[in-house]
Image (cartoon, rainbow, N blue to C red; front, side, top):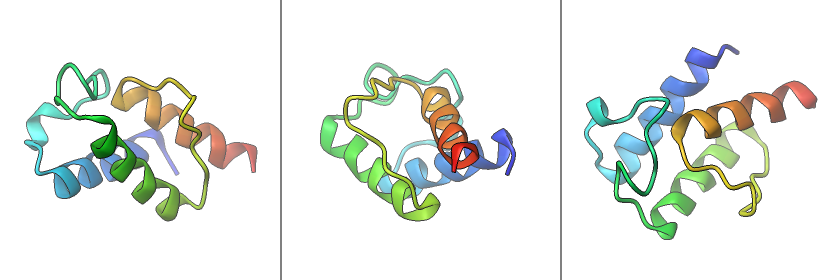
Length: 80
């Protein structure tokens, strides 16, 4: 699994789940500042990602951007 594949999947989840414009979702996109997501929105996205990749994402990970989430998923999958 490549970084691009994970990014595209996470982008699809954000767009589908939260009705966000796909052009707004880039690696440096901040969940709160750029997408105006609240903690419930972010939880919904993380829940889908956890199910998809069979990983757990702690709420204390401090991820603020899409790229940080992509890197976290990749690290979890390669550490298994």
